[in-house]
Image (cartoon, rainbow, N blue to C red):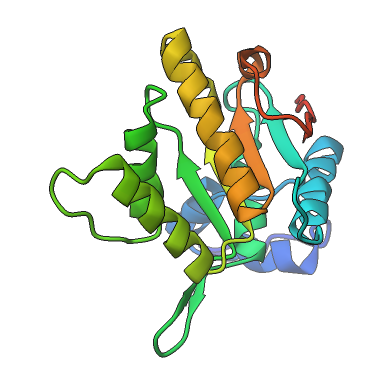
Length: 207
């Protein structure tokens, strides 16, 4: 009896046959890697993101809120979209068409600007003042050519008091009006009632 018997893989697609013939450790690594599964609601959300990305610049841009329970595929949709429009750089210029920023654990304007600048790789001096951070963030967002800003974990806005929530929501309105780019918010179901900026479409994701 052969030590390595020949296995019939004709029931698999050619690409899958190649993967099935890999050594066991490589197959395990492939199985553990992220995979895009284009189920209908995910494709719909991705198409809406693409439509917003191509939206002509105007004073009031439409926005999008991806709503769904934890571990429901929202992050994979955003990652798939980001990979479709990857960052690039030339001799002296960085280009980041889609910038993804995670909402801090509480709705703090300063902490959000810190996260925003860090996502663009901007160095921060010790104890920066809010007006300086705001102007630096706006300048860099324009310089690197951000065409869509994705704010992850938006439900963290609920962790703050009413004053903090109002300040943060005013910040979102300010960014949308100032930059004239679509904002994509991603969060769990309780996010919607907190008073988000107008013009937001809300696709709900279901497994």
